[in-house]
Length: 113
Image 1 (tube, rainbow, N blue to C red):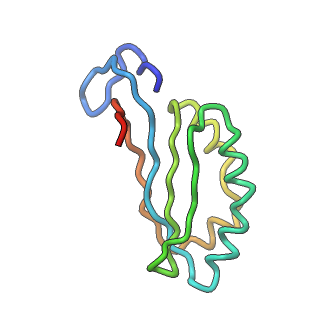
Image 2: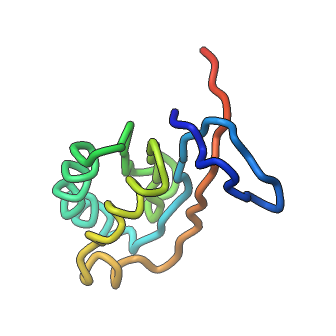
Image 3: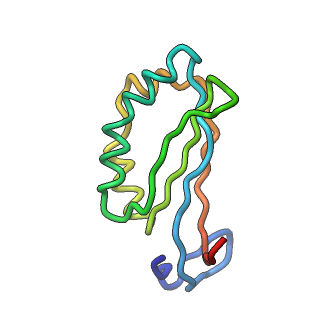
C-alpha cells in the first residue's frame, strides 16, 4: 500500500492513511461468447499484470452463470490504475459486454485471512 496524498479528500474526509485500490465486480456477455471473450482478454491480463503498480489482475468465468465474468484487480495507486485504463480495452471487447457492475474500493488496511 502507498500513502494517500496529504490532504486528499475522499467522501468528505481528508485522509493521510495508506491505501490500495481494489476493482471488483462482474461483466456479462452472451453465454456463447464468454470463452472467446476471455481468450481475447489474455493480452489485456498480461499487460495489466506487468503494468507498474498492478498487484493482481484476474478475469474469470463464473462457475454457475454462463454469461458472467468475475473481475478482480488490485492496484497500488490511482495513478497506476489510470495509466493502465488509458490503454483501454479493444472496441470489440466493449461491444461484447451486455451488462456490468464493477466498482473501485479504497482499502486502508489489510491483515492475513
